[in-house]
Length: 154
Length: 206
Image (tube, rainbow over all chains, first blue to last red; front, side):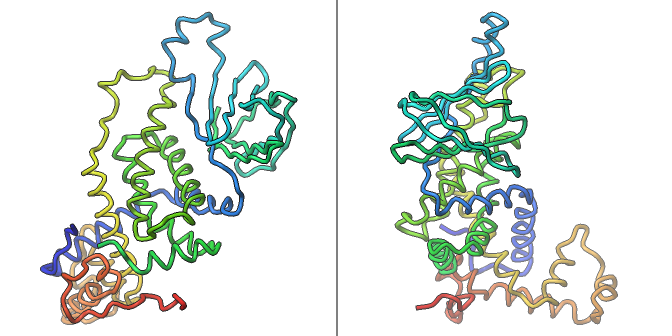
């Protein structure tokens, strides 16, 4: 399988090494730092809720809608046991947990302090003001399910 | 071919909650994740999104990896899936609209991904081997690899090394690199009989 052969002469070793160091330099340091910080979640028993729908994709649909409706952006995050739906409204971020149930939501801005809120009985919540920087959400349901979204930029 | 003992040791340490080991793992494999994202022609923001997901999924699942040596393959497969997810979610097409299917970036074939894994493993082994060379060797090789490569007279002046000894030192350093146990893990049994494969760092207990 390996392309490395024992016939590697000095020139080839040097060229391969140059390529290896170049590949490393091509990766931005922030990308590596973000990877390292992911380890903070190693002892948090949360499912990853991934972005599975973003209305930005449906631009054509948006164009065909009325102006006031076109401004609504919707996002869906899905984990093994939970779905989190978000809608960007005029001055707040509206959300719901599915299946409908009460939960605690922690909003974690990148590099900022967390804020927490509680949903209503059917899992609806509202975040005000709309986060202006990148953030993620950690959802803890009354039944004990934890889900964590990736970083969200609105 | 990929059962690098240092990777197996790293995975075990990460399982024990060792942040340092995790950092090493990320440094070693970030170029693999990055290069696959580049193949999918993702925007920088989408690459960050994929990176986040891949590392979080790895944190979540590293304890369940049945075969630590299969980590590069797992990472490549997961990265590929995440790239497709990001493309499907259709982010960042805000202004142009989502391109029609035939204009979507081509899905790199499984063979290309496999090639990325091989290159990434070889690169990681080379970097690990290079990092363990004595400082004078690293200085000399770094100068020789710079572009354009400097004249021997300049190397001599910068490193305080006689011009006549640059050639032999270069050969000795490269030979040392070739014999590194890290490279033995990549080269496998093709490396020759005289190479002893041992734990590179001597940190692995039991």
